[in-house]
Image (cartoon, rainbow, N blue to C red; front, top):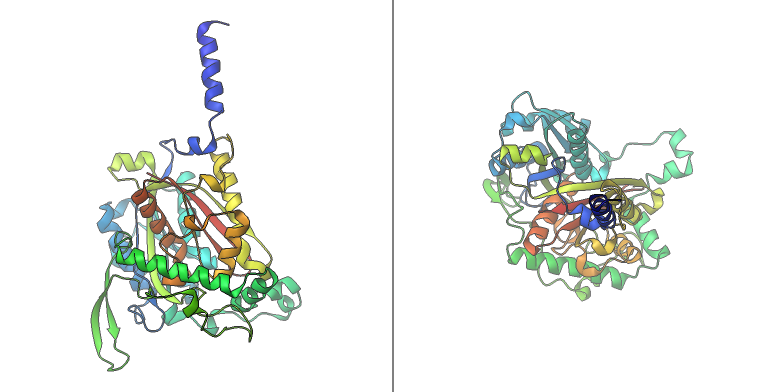
Length: 425
């Protein structure tokens, strides 16, 4: 073997010994990248700043903001996918109209999807996969929900006798608060631990808001607002999450009455807030972004979706996160596997403190890595929006800290989980 062959062999061995993390940090022209992302503020359902604003108006606002921020030619955007859970007809007609109002031409296609709490993430991943498959070059994944206008008993369809006769199918209809209460009891998640986790979420969100850490991700919207006392219709600009509160402690949360069982542990203070909001993410290949002069915030490395028992829907992230890490490892051709220790920030949706806390403990995720700016307990969970919102929250925080790898994840009603691995630039 000559010197050149030996050198090539050694180089190959060195390359093959690289960890998945090292490989993940390498750039490729085919990377699916995020060049712009933003969200509205989140406001309290039924009484916050967006209580009178239809979901289509929220979406039109964030899509306009995305065009303003990215300065991309709207005619280049070939598809917009919007996650939405509660809207009749999936909001398909309204979201097409919203895209046209936002300034997209008739050549831009629009669709909606519903995978419940992961709808926003599923929309982003679907668009990324369309780009990866060569179906489109540029697309937007988004999410929106007006829980003020569309939340309630009518959101759950009645089951047929056939579905009711199947035990696991019937379990899909058990209210999430009830099954989460049962899960917390069965998995020994104490009220004290839940209240401590929830208080920390409020405290982190309050500090982040005071320090202006949400400002970059929030796009202000000017809307009509009917004063509940006077009935006067006002024009207001909404630019801050109005569910964030100061002075929340485990002790103050400990005084709130349990919501789903007389001696239960779950209540309004340690569960996600009912909220209104929207978010959007602009995606394309790295080569396309460079050709268009688009800045790159980060890229999608891998995503997973899994199923779990309907009565244990809260454990979804526990199963989805390891699977996403496995897929991220496989996407770069192996190497020592990507692990929880390689991840700098986890954005895990706080549907309930109980389930988020349990998943984190089981996965061995340090508390300081979870939702460093707070989560849905502190500022809300507009169902179809959260998965898209997490992308902005994560990528801007990774960039601010000079960190690289993040994970977004959530549990999903009826027993599922979803997760995605992101790399910031």
